[in-house]
Structures are given as structure tokens and as C-alpha cells.
Length: 379
Image 1 (tube, one colour):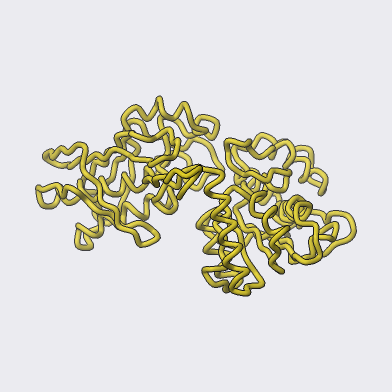
Image 2: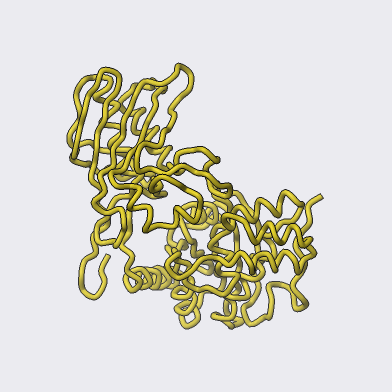
């Protein structure tokens, strides 16, 4: 990537570093030797290799450490020492995970991990399991403990405390790669994607907030790769360019949290620009007939996902209303009969949650000239 004439170097997520360290530790546990450098497979097929920054072989464990390189991204975990300790596990238990020092533990609902689980997210867990399988020959019962030097202090600079992740940082990543946070470089890459789509005569493009929603929307509409725009958090940057470089059909796809922020008027969805307003989300529910008690619970939710879960427990589906409101925010930017806009919301597993259907953006509302419809109530 380039920004202001400077090449921006990509880096590696905490999940990638933990997976590579776990592979080296498992290899040493089984053979007595640490591979150095050690390579690891990423979800996109890449295979980076890492030099070990530490290794220790004990009577019943092996530990390897890697220094995280975030490239040119201003990541608070850049330079952190990430260690994986591997022990043989209980027969039949598979790969189990443990939070070592500096890795947080989930204490509140609304996250992709259960309460009491180490904050090692689902994709890094999959990467770690795959890395161990490469050296274990199919033997699958291991305990993996991830530690981060000074992780408790690093976590103070993150949102973990607010989310109820206590004791350290989270082990994160969906692609395994850290893309430098350069607004100009990223937005320009979106524009070039639009240019290519138009040059190839495509009539439908989709901008997604992340890999899960991108995979889901591609499958939902059977789109070619060239139709997929790496929108990320930059909804506004994509829409403003599309207004002057139109494509007939545009889909915006994302998860419940990002789409709630769009529904609340945000066109830059990065966490540094602000969090979703749970008071506003509670009002959406109340306007649709939610009880004061339910609206209060939504207002006090830990996360947007938690709020959606609370509403669902009471029979309310927040997705359709949020999709409709997100459509209104995005349509105001486009505002032309030349472009029909669709909003798709998916969950963390890529399952469909809700939609606002394709409607020309010179309309007031998606396929509905009247008042915003109430939330769907499940029976």
C-alpha cells in the first residue's frame, strides 16, 4: 500500500503470531527441536515465516515466543512478545485454550466467546489448531496457553476493559494480516476497485466491512471477486465516489455492530471515530413497541451483539429496523435514481440476519414510501 508517496508495510496479527509460536512449541514437544524460522498458514493461503524470539523445553511442555510486527500500522500491540506454551491434553478433548499472563478472559456476554473463555478469538483458534495439525500428524489433544508480555498494561489502551475482557489483551485477527491504517491509501484502493468494476461492465458491486461479511455477500449474490470492494470502515469514502462513478446496484454488507453505527448516521465505522449508541438502539426498540424493561436492558447491554441477543430473547428482531435505518444513511449520500442500494446484515458466522432490499436511492426509504415499519416480532 502507498500513502503520500510512502510505501506502507503490512504486519501480522496477534493471532498469526500465536499460531506460529504454537506450531513451533508443538513441534518441540513432539520432537525435542524448535523449527526456526517457523511458517504458518493464513486464511487467505499466505504462508509467512517467523524467527523465534524465545524457546523453552520442559519436562511436560514446550514454549515458543514471537515478537509481533504490526508493519506501519499504529497498533498498540506492535513489538509485543507473544508466547505459546503447548502441553499434551486430556485424551479426546481436542485442542483446548488457556489464557496465560497478559491475555484477557471474557467476563461479560455479547462477545463471540463464552463467559470464562480466554479471549482468543475464533479465527485465531482455527489457525492455531491448523498449525498444530501440521506438525502433530493428526494427533489432536493439546492444551495451548497464550501469554503476552506486559499484556495487562497494553490492554489499558484498548476497549477490552469496557467490553468486560479482563486481565490482558485479546488474540485477534480474521485474515492474519494487519493492513496499515492509512485512510487515504485505503479509500484510494476502494476507488480503484470501483473503476475496475465499471471498466469490466459490472452492474453490481458489494462493499463489506470485513472478511466474514464479504464471504457471505459473495455467496448470497454469487458475485465474482472483481465485484467485491474492500470497503472496511470507509462507507462514506466508497459512497461519495460511487455517486460520481455510479454502478447500478450497490450492496453494503456488514455485521450487527458496524451496521448499527451506519444506522445511527456514522459513515466512518472505525472504533476510533466512536462507538454505537446503545441509548439510540434502545429507542429504536422502544419505538417498535418494546417494553420499558426491555429497552432498559438493551441500554445496559455490554455490546451491540449483546443488545441484539437480549431483544431476540424477548421475541424482537432488531435487524430489519437497523438495516432500514442504515439504508437511509447511505442513500442520503448517493441520492440518485441511477443507483439502487441494498443493505445486508450478517452475524459473526456469516449467517443472514436482515436486509433492506434494493431501492433507487432517490427514494425516501427502501421499498417503502411510508413510515419505518416496526420491528419483526418472532413468535
